Length: 119
Length: 112
Image 1 (cartoon, each protein chain N blue to C red):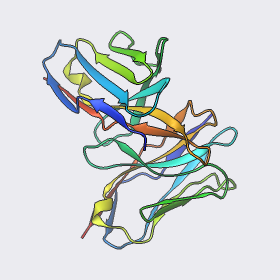
Image 2 (tube, chains in turn orange, cyan; image 1 turned 180 degrees about the vertical axis):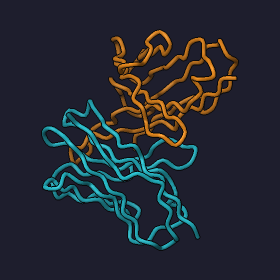
Image 3 (cartoon, rainbow over the protein chains, first blue to last red; image 1 turned 45 degrees about the horizontal axis):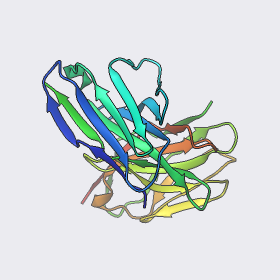
């Protein structure tokens, strides 16, 4: 089945540094990928929709300059948390529509998530 | 607009108990409905799905039926196991598949 690989799975960084998280579709192409943020014991918060070859679409309240998204190819999207601070510590998850099942449903495949801890 | 409402947790059950997690939706058109599961420390995995009214999705003993008349997609399992402990998310997507909407998640803990 479709696989989305997310890397790194856990990163710890110092305050003020930038961290890049990669999201790759391993066996399918994804013109669109979604980036979410999840706080402990809370639901997913859609941050942005990344579009191959064009600018990402950010949800209201998400800082574009803080969370840089690049969708460089049909299999790779990256999220860079710039000048990270402790309040950016969170679980970041990406997903991609992995094609329609025989039933016609468009299924989302999720990466395993990346835990960011900013000291 | 589109939205999903699911029952709040946490839910704690004894092993072999019956599970129901309620999910209702609001949508324009004819959405597809999903249940995703998130095990501790992991990402989300698709558990089951249904694409049209009266469809029943099933997997690993879990079932959910797409009820258009009640706009519901309740998740059920007849006998839960400790390994079912996880957070369950109800979701819907529109027909284009470009928009996905998630419920707040329901945490389930199954005790031996």
